[in-house]
Each structure stands twice: as structure tokens, then as C-alpha cells.
Image 1 (cartoon, helix red, strand yellow):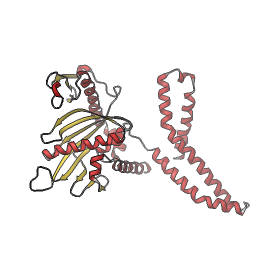
Image 2 (cartoon, helix red, strand yellow):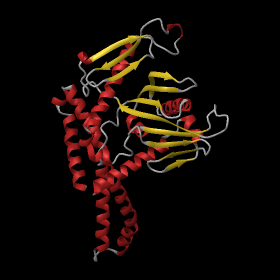
Image 3 (cartoon, one colour):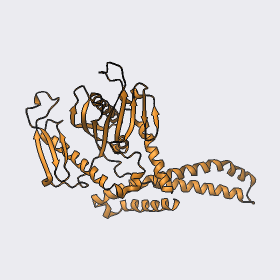
Image 4 (cartoon, helix red, strand yellow):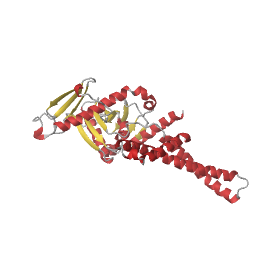
Length: 358
């Protein structure tokens, strides 16, 4: 591990030198690439410097203790520091191991959020609305921007399905753990007998793709316009501002009707389409990323039951790691899911570390 850190440290110093080179400074694209590489390497470089210093101090103290000619008082001081130095080296080694783990290349990306009502009839639609509001609150906490792209309201509240884009810092890194089937257990408002019903919704989290990552041929697109439905006042049904785009080669269909402007709806629908195609390509290449994907927390498969929201008991249970929190109302009303996200991320790191070590 130390040799690997040393090689990264050497590369960091090379990249830092390149940043001051005239050829780099005169080329904006090259300057951006080198700056990004330096920013990526710096946390590991800083860990290497700290680990090297702590290791040298530990070895120095051990040499003093083992030297028969050394002053007894100096030996005593070295022994007193030995325990703390060993702890410090062990901590830095662990941090370095985690820093060297493979990173998900999509972690820094924005996402497309899809929520669909599943089994449970009207109650599933209401739960879809509850989940969407939970993610809205979470996005507000993280200072992300959430915009609805397409929604289909359910008859008794909530949504049959709703799609939104979320933009901000490391959205996918936090939201990717939400993909899967979410189950709710509670007494519906329409239940006269007071019986607990179980309903479900599927959540999909698609990393937003850059245009350079997904090359879409305009000739492969079938674009339809239609009149918006739902809330919107007098504007509704007057102009064909809603957009539906079909990618003929893959059969993927996306729509956006939330904006009054057809141009804005088209731009958002294209971003949605790029994300869907990118996700399909990523799934097709999953076998090539077997080591990383195998150790991901949960498969992200939409049929997977990842979490249960039990209202009578006031608890949320994440089945992937066996985590249970008894503050369901707080989580749903304020979007405070970070504790769950952190626990899932830590479990993923532990699995990746286990695989890396052997």
C-alpha cells in the first residue's frame, strides 16, 4: 500500500509542476484536465505525507527505546509517545486504504429521479407522493435543485408516477442507494376496518449523462407534441407545449410537460433521454464492472425490496444492512435520510475493502 501511495504522490508532484508550465497555461482544455487530476490526487497525497511523517516518528521512537546507549530519560519519553504514534499510524493506514478504493465514476453527477406507484392501488399512489416530498426535503437540506419533468397524479392523491431532475454536489453519490422497491405498511385513510395494508413504490436513480457520453443521432428520434394536462390554469389544453421523445433504436420514451415553453420541455426531455440511454448502456456493461458492481450495496434492481416504512411502529428498516430507525415521521416530513445514506455508504466501503484485501 505504501508503495502505491508513493507512486500517487510522485504523480501529484508531476501534475503540480505541469500546472506552472507555459504549454499547460496556454491550453485551456489541458489546464482544466491537469487541474482536475491534481484535485483528485491531492487528498491521497496529503494522507501519504501525514502517514510518512507519523511512520518516521514511530520508527525513530522505537530506535531510541532499543538503543542501549540512549539516555534513560529519552527512552522513557519515547515509550510514553509510542502508544499514540501507533494509533495514529493505524488510523492513517485505514484512511489510506479507503482513499485507494475504486470510486464510482458517476458519484459526482446529477440525477434523474423516477418514482412509480406499484402494488397497493390508491395507497401506493399516495405513498409515491410521500416519497417524492421526502426527497424534496432532502434536496433542500443538501442545497440541491429539484425540478419536476413529468408527473401523472393519482386519483386519491399522490402520483401514479413522477420524474424529476436533481442537480447539485455529489447527488448520485448520495441518491444511488435509494434505487429499488420501497414498501409501506399503514392503515389507509380509506380503510374503514382499521386494517394495515402493505403497498409499494419503485424508485429509480439515473445518473445524468453528458452529451459526450451519449451520442444521439437526431435521425433516431421521433418527437411528438401534445397539450399539457394537470395543473396549469388557462394555459392547459391551449397550446401543444408538452414533448414526447421516442428513441427508435432502443424504444426508450420520455416526456416532459411541466414547462409552459415547448423549447424548455424539449431541452429537459433530451436530458432525461440521455440519462435513460446512459443507464441502459451502463447496465449492458455491468459484467465488465463485475468487481465494483458485485460489492455495491444492493443491486438497484427495481424488484428488490430495499426498505420498509412501518407507520404503526413508527420505524424505517433498510433490509440491505438491517438498519432500523424509530423516527419515521421525522424522516418522512423533513427528509432526514442522511443517517441511512451514511450507513449504506460505510457498508459499501467495508465490502470494497474486504474485496481489495483479498
